[in-house]
Length: 411
Ligand code: MLT
Image 1 (cartoon, helix red, strand yellow):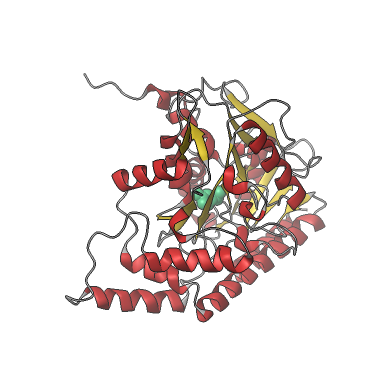
Image 2 (cartoon, helix red, strand yellow):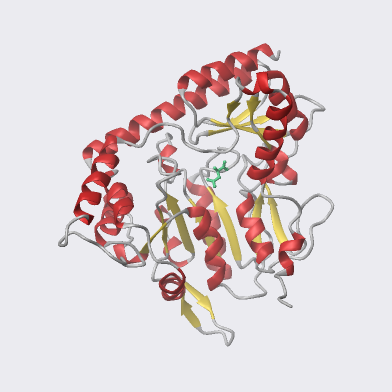
C-alpha cells in the first residue's frame, strides 16, 4: 500500500483563494441575478491586456520557432542568457546593485520558487514568518514537515510567527532569539505596506549575526512610488551574504497567465552542512533546478525580455499607474466610510480595518451579499489578520469606480 505524505493532513483548510472561490460559487448559484453584478477584488490577479511589446516579441518568437534555424528545443534550465542579462542590467546593475546574470534563475513563478526553495534547506531549521502572511510560505513548510499540527488560532506548532500590526507599521520587530530562515515580503502581501531602508538594514544585520537566510519576496516592488523605499533587498549592504530574492513579471508585466518570474541566489550566500562547513546555496539551487525544472518556454522568455525595451517600460509604467490610481480610489472610498486604511500607496493592495465588532469573514459576507464585491478576509492570512480585509486594486478603472460607489452605499 502506498503511503501518503501525512503532513498534508495537517493543513488546516483549503488554500485561501480556492476557499474564497468556493464561497463565491455557492453565492452565485443561489443568487443568479446578483451574480451578474459581481466584481472580484479578492485574488490579486491582473486584468489589463498583455502589453503590445510583449505580444509582438512573442509573435516573432513563434515565427522563429517555425524555421529550422530559429527552432529551440530544451532551453537552459536557469533561463536564456538574453533574459538574465536584461534582468541583471535593468533591475540591478543600472540601479547600482551588484547582481550578475548567472545569479539569476528564470522560472515560471514566485509562488513556485518560494515553495520549491525548501528543497535546498535541511530539517530542524527554525523558521519565521510574518503574521499576517502570504499563505504559501506557511503551507509549504507544513507540506515538507517543518511544522507540527495546527493550533486553535490556525497557526502551526514549530513556526515562529512575527506579528505585524498597525503599531509596528506592519513590519515585524526583530526577534530577541535566533531563527534560521525568515520570510519577508515587501511591498507586503497582504497589507500593501512597505519596509524602510532602516528596517531592512536591521533585518540584514540580524541575519548576518545569526547566519540566517532571508527569503525576500519582492514580487510587488515595481509598484513602489516612494523615493527612498528599497526596491530590492540587495540595496542593503551585506544582503548578498544573507538573502534570496524572488521577483516576478506577473503583476507589473501582466504575466499571471503567461508565467515568468525569477529568483536571485547570490554566490556569496552560504548555508551550513551537517558537519558545520559552508555550502553555496547557489550551487544547490542550480542543481535542484536542472534536475526538477525544464525552464520557461523560449517564446515566453522573449516576451518577458520585451518588458525591458523602451516601449515595454512605457507600457509597464502605464499599467502600474492605472492600478495605483485604483488603489487610491479604493483607499479614499474606505476612508470616507470612516474605516482605517493601510497600504495602497506603494502596492496594489489596500488593507482595511473592519468596522468595530465585525470579523474578517463577516465582512467578506457583507461585501458579497450587500455589494456583490469579492474581497479577501484578513484572517485568511493569519491570526493577526483577523479584523481586517484586503481589497485588490487589480481591476479596470470602471469596475473600481463601481466598487467605490457600492462601498459608499454600505454607509
Ligand atoms: C494574492 O492575491 O495574494 C496573489 O494573487 C497571490 C499570488 O500571486 O499567488
